[in-house]
Image (cartoon, rainbow, N blue to C red; front, side):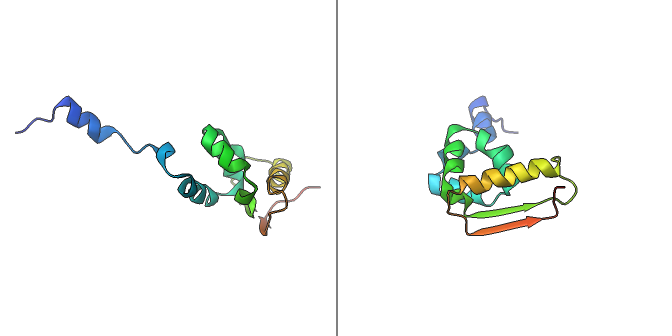
Length: 103
């Protein structure tokens, strides 16, 4: 049997540092997430992600849906949608809103 020393074991357990990705790749990844995730949590991960989420080009496409499993009430979803539209600063090209409404 061979033994793995502590240093080799430590190297094997260290994962990639996602903050070291080039900004354009990080932007591409974040743009694939849904609007609700971006507004409610992604923008709070770190300063880099916050800055990416503030970029109006990030909001060219807004896709939102409430499939009944959302933890957010319809009124909250409307606020999130309005926030995303405001963030686009006129750069919005495509918006899809499915299955939520208000009185």
